[in-house]
Structure formats: C-alpha cells, structure tokens
Length: 255
View (cartoon, rainbow, N blue to C red):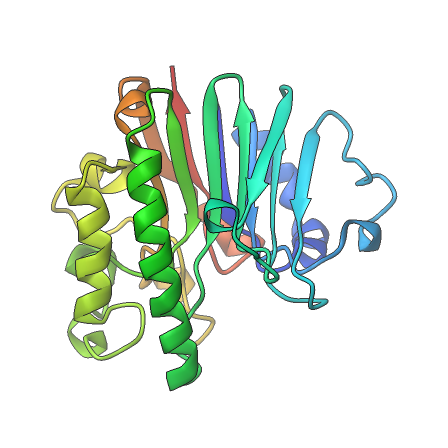
C-alpha cells in the first residue's frame, strides 16, 4: 500500500498547478492532504467526488483556512476528527481507516506569527502527545502523517544555526518531536536518511530556497510498531514541490 502525505497549500490552487498529474505519477493508494483551504462545494464539479477516489473532508469552519482531507482508492472508513474526538473547528485532525491501517492526518498549528500563536501551538502539542501515546500502543497498524511545523534536528533544517530561536526549531519543540520518536514512533524519513542532511519537505518562497534545496523537514510519516513491520520504503518528491506547493509530498510504502 502506497500512502502519500502532502500540504497542498490550497487545494484549488494545487489543482490549477498540476496536482493531479503528480498524483498520477506517484500512484498512491491513499492521500492525506493538509491545508486544503476549501469547502467541498467550492471545488470543481468533477471533484464532488473525485473520480476513482473515496474521500473524507474535514475543512475548517473559517473559509479559506487550514483543513484536511484523506482520499483512498480503496474503501475508506471515517473514524473521527480532532485530538481524541475533541472539538476541531480548524480542521486539523482527521482519522480514517483503509483496510486494517488507521490513518491519522494532522496539520499542527504554526507558531511564528505571534506569541499567542506559539502558545496555541504548544497547547495543541501537549494534548496531542497524550493521544499519540494511546495510538502508538494499538495492536493494529497506525500511521500519523502530516505537517508538524517542527524540524526535529539540525539535519532537518538547512540554516539550522540561525534558526535556533525560530518557531519550528525551538529547543523544546525539538525535544517534543524527539519524545514522540523515543516513545516508539518510527520516523520513516530520518530512519532511512540517517545522519545525512535532508531531505527537506518545505521551502520558503523567498530567494531561491526551493531551487537550491535549502529547506526544512517539517512533514512526517510516523509508524507505530505494527505499521513498522510492514514498512518497505519512503521518499520525498521534490519535483511536485517545485510545481504545485511550497511543500513536497512524503510517500511511504507499506507491505
């Protein structure tokens, strides 16, 4: 089973920029999308529903903001929204299941815009941590994927020295991210990449960051123990990032 996670930075814009051609090329069985920034009824008619896909939408209540969606070629069961079913007006957590694999699609708040935004992010992190521990201990495969808005270590950020006081690379944010991994979540990309720098999944629109591949790795696919046993490979598709979004999709293969 091939599963893709991608912050599309606005689904309507992504469709205009070639989203579907990249999905055809990458051939996933399931897509976990973040920052869709759209209501289903605002999409083109052929996307209600998209041909060949089962889909569950979790848009934000505020139009043009945030939101998640999960699509699958196979039957897709809706399990819930929000952290452990909590109220989720910004559409940040969508839980579905394909066959026996639970897909937890997340879009963690960013904290860079203001001190209050950072406090909101940290409250969200504390709530998510408790739930993630419960999910990790499930006997069936669980996959958490999406935009965490945190780079886990210096190998995950090209300009890491100058960003140590920047939201997304603060010491306690990295400690939190490493805590998830230390508790037993398998960080697919970092386990494969080892101590190499990158691969990055997000690039600033400033300068030539995307072209020069000077980015951040803030999009993850994490596996619990049962899912890890089925893990067969992972890669970040930078080609799609150069054309469609400021994020690149992370693509994982499970047996």
